[in-house]
Length: 102
Image (cartoon, rainbow, N blue to C red; front, side, top):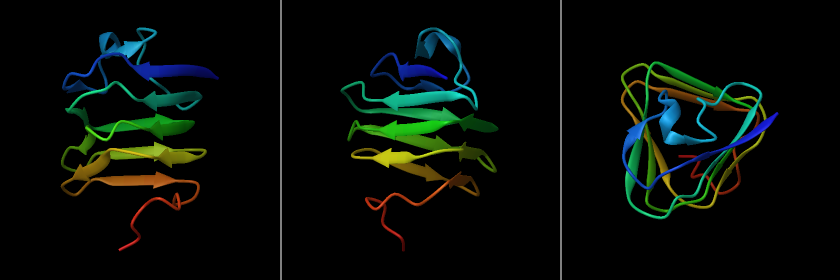
């Protein structure tokens, strides 16, 4: 498993390696952290699969494009940010206590 971070506080596409540190698109065996300080949108389309997800920056938005999927095989931690989307789906092992379950 590799630790991968969103590299910049700028809007970008999840599927572009240059947006990540190290420069690789995260995969199902990777632990992803999004904590770059700022206000930005990370667009996910058509899908993203990761091992764990830690969304820490309050200004970050994960945007699921029409029909996009975000799959977290392990734990998801949310201490900031949001997930938005139109007809998108996000799945994780367990809904984090910090998520509104409405």
